[in-house]
Length: 328
Length: 188
Image 1 (cartoon, each protein chain N blue to C red):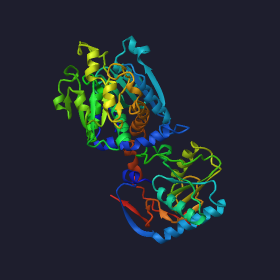
Image 2: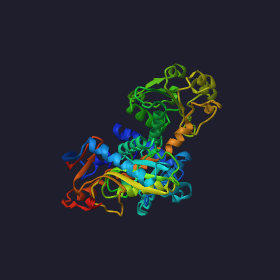
Image 3: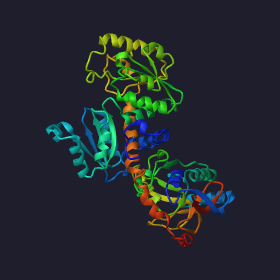
Image 4: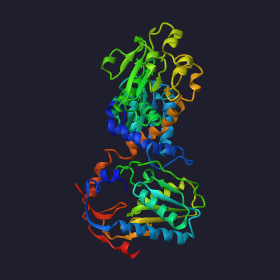
């Protein structure tokens, strides 16, 4: 595995393997001295063309826990503002010998473009409306902590599906692990081709919540909406928001998730995030562990890049018996 | 060496073909009992002793050692495990994947740690384990118990308690289970 660009490029086995390893990384992050030398000498750059606090911080912490050096390309204060193209920025990164680039960009597909220009591993930290694979991985891990296995669990995702890269990645990841997904949104907030998605579509939140094993709320992405998709925010909240009343009808064993940042009072009522079954903080904590696992898979365990080196070692004809063990 | 590494990395890829069985169940049981007596003799009991198995081969021997110590002494020393994947010196040279979270049962500072592994070979795994323990405190001393010492050390490391010394060729593979110890080679 050289890059992590989308969930759909991961096989179900690779996905399970990443999730299997994640508790080891969570353990490292929980140590008093939370740093291991696994990626010593490697450099990870974060290149964010869109605003982010938690994702960028999370990647940076993850890289530091594994002893990698981190660089932030602060796009707002860099040459990008002077009109530098993505390609020129990529070549600058390449020339500096960076091992992995964590990229967020407003255009779908930008990370794929970047892989053509740099030799470094590229990790997609969100591209437009398209994909956000590490968010999906941490969501799967958080759900596994709640139920053990996602197989035949019913996950209800509510909100602005149309503009949500989280929804696209999550649907692929959840269904790959055997869960069933229901998307609930007004027709204007659904993407045009959901009939090809492995999901059920509903416009009735109360009906969908009856047999939900987990509820996933998506943020109203007002910054991406270029037209009036919802006539009135209060009406949206009444029909599609997790109000205190709806939350109280859920079993306390049903986890409530949100990728953050939350719009309290829009998709989630102001006091709902304080309920015990809200696992938003677990999601953030798990985000560090899963990103450590991803960085380690791409850079540390060698993946495919390191394997050819080994061939030289295989045909070692050294048959000499070491008798020194006897002398002990 | 973990099952995953065995499968993934030459010269350990392929399947194991045994040449000889070196120890059987009874011999393994007696060796562990003897090692338990040696641990007690050297440390004057099990107070302040912590047994830590190395993932994955050392986990079962460590459990059996703890049980042997309990049977003799009546007190059960704490048992932990350490995964050295993040401390290995061959990261990037071959696939190294973590097996299970490290579990250190108590504060190590001032205690005697007995590291347990199945096979002592190049010594690199033990070096990595010593490095990993550093993050959890400063033990008074660290001792090493292995089921098999097969030679070919690449680092200045030796075992304090040895189940069996087994001369071997570098390319051979030693496999330890609680049923038998076998020597053989990996074939494609």
